[in-house]
Length: 439
Picture 1: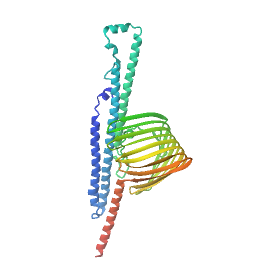
Picture 2: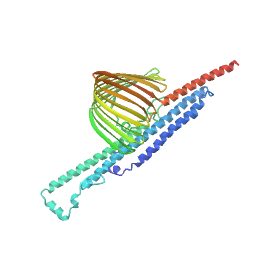
Picture 3: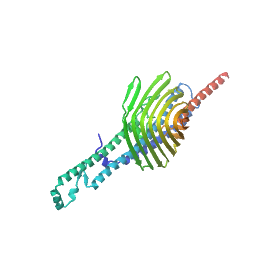
Picture 4: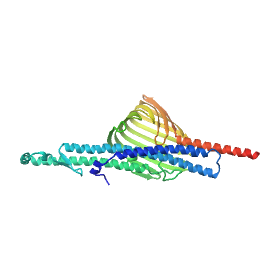
């Protein structure tokens, strides 16, 4: 049921912040529990003294338990972020409605409990002034103009209320998606969501129509254009703006299994123009970025999961012009970068990941004019995964760029070390039993 004008005007949004803080504490506590469980249960029992089928069964269940602790932390932190962002957006939109009503009332328009505006300026006149006005030949015209303006205020207020309702629905979608596990991992469905998205704009976006053709899932959007801008003083100072005119965007995905190998293929093509920017300064650090791009780009990527080792290969192409500038320094990210290019470029990227440590490289050929340089490292708060990368290139007519990226997944690395320790423990136990049998 859509929110009414009264719902918006009387809503108390402060519980959203209280709930966000509680979920934040919960997420951190689940992370602590995961560490305690791995240290005091998994590693303590994997010292080689306990072996056999019961130990194997316990190890399998303990891995699932540790994974659920990690997933619970990810889910709780995502919900906390969504609630905090919901408070910021809903408070901003609620204030816009109240400001609109106050402005209408300052101009002698009364707004009733349903959000309907009525002109009451005539009521402020004395009886003699009202009588004189009614005798004025332009009185009917003035009354008609007042009614038209009142309707304009009513429509504007209704539009502002609708914006609050749309954001409220996006929050509902985001919270629902964050708390549902759709993964098909070894632990099955129905657990905590290890892939919960904590960004309201992404997690709360409406469903995009997609079609499946011969195993392919194809998503298309555009043409469309829009401009958005936000400025929020909450938790420091931050803001963002985005203007775009998309001619079209097509994404095709397909996944398949070949024996013990999982293969995923993604192809993406886009044409249009975009101008984005953001800035933020708070107790966690600060940063700013801006980017403008016009033209077309395409990408195709293949990933293969062979269990202990993953591979990926990616091909990319771009034709048009782009420029950007980035600088950020927080506890989770430090990065600097700049780019400017006009022309066409094509490149290949590839890499692998083993035991939670990944290494990848990029090579590009440029036909045009420009330069690019970036360096940085960041930690994904949701997954705890670290990324370290650098890229540089230049061209006056022909040239190119090279880049490297290193990723470290502490969770996967810890599991790999644990499995290795278990294997060593089993081997040591076997040698010990063999030596005993000799004597």
